Amino acid sequence: MISARLGHFFDAPLKKFAKHIPFNPNTITIFGFLLTIAAAFVIPKNLKLGGLLILLAGFFDMLDGIVARVNEKATKFGAFLDSVLDRYSDAFLFLSFSWYLAAIGDHLGAFLSLGTLVGAFLISYVRARAEGLGQDCKTGLMERPERIILLIFAALTGWIVPILWIMLVLTHITVLQRIYHVWKLLKNHKPK
Image 1 (cartoon, helix red, strand yellow):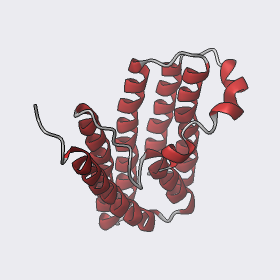
Image 2 (cartoon, rainbow, N blue to C red; image 1 turned 45 degrees about the vertical axis):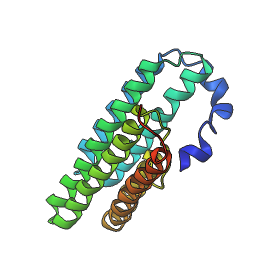
Image 3 (cartoon, rainbow, N blue to C red; image 1 turned 180 degrees about the vertical axis):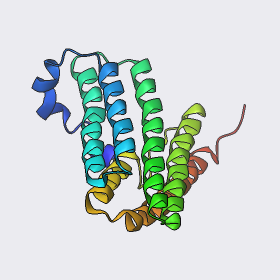
């Protein structure tokens, strides 16, 4: 939803800055991923610091695409690498929140985090499977930017369980939205 509306919103304001970045976009992607891993290990010990690290990693996750587009270094492999590392990042973050919640005895919260992780993976899987069938599938309420924003908010405010409830419901609604979207696209399509 945010991606569809704001897509390349920051390209213009960050264009001059991005032109002076000497690093390959894939290097920026990997650095952002390493920050996410650091956040995942910090969250069980210091929730707010973990939230700030997720925010910083999110900046690099956005910057890699801007640098690639502005400097005409966008590649299919770069998009592929970014997508794969995003899935790993999601896993590390939701497992980290689950670890934090289990450690304080909130097993329901830990389950919510794991259930949201399943939904996040299914959102990506449904899109990839639809694209494998030649269909565009970027619809839905809870894409990755929304999940990251909510995780940052949860870590900074401490309202983890209520936010995980929201995310759990909306991630699985998004999966259903995408399934319905692909069904509509394919229902009149005759196989060859």
